[in-house]
Image 1 (tube, helix red, strand yellow):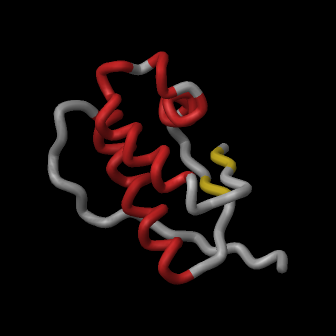
Image 2 (image 1 turned 30 degrees about the horizontal axis):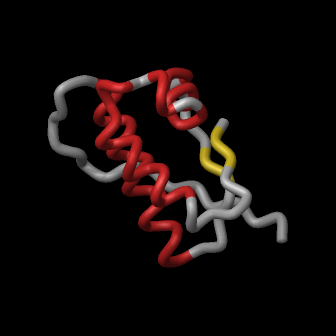
Image 3 (image 1 turned 135 degrees about the horizontal axis):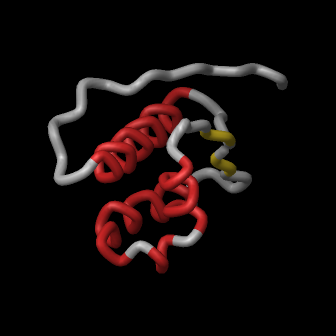
Length: 82
């Protein structure tokens, strides 16, 4: 439909690394948008987050968080992150 919904993050608790926080923010955004919007594309300014989501096996230290993201991705048939 050409609609764009911009969503910021919530106040996320301090995590082990910045990348853990980025993953938590993406997970929160996916959960939030799933409930309210028909969203398929997500954007970030973190190139490592994009790499992690596109190739989760290459990031074993984040396997728990990436597993949650992969579960969320199943709800977005045309999921894209840039």
